Length: 164
Image 1: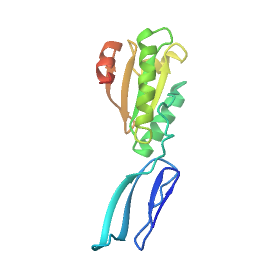
Image 2: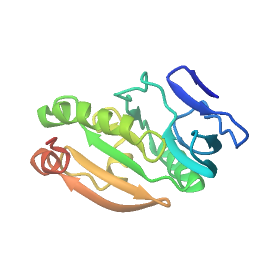
Image 3: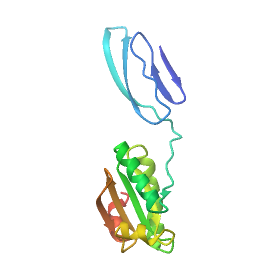
Image 4: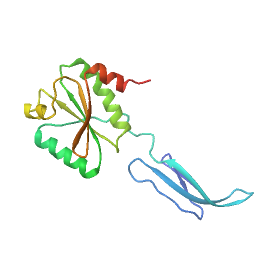
């Protein structure tokens, strides 16, 4: 017997049933089936469980000061989740152009990587110094609470984020 609810597939027929969680994800289904020719004891099928209304853009979260930055790094370290920080300025054309591209990436990597931004003109300069920022945009990758890599300048960032 095969049920379809909310654009998601569920297999029920003497085998296992895996229901999706509320969040996006994949599931392994184990089902027995009689196709008229041969009974298959174990038939595994992997399917996507998110519906078609999954967001295509996720707004980047602002980092406001050093304490907030420390809190984000601690949380990311506890979750073993890398983060990407877009150091930008509201007056920077390349930064403005880049932000929607990063928001698309944030939606694509929603549960794997968290995306943030820092408007260097709206935060204490201690935070800007801590990020060692001299040019905008600067995109940094942090993992396990530590700085790992960065891309500096709009031209370099376009090379990394350019869509085919």
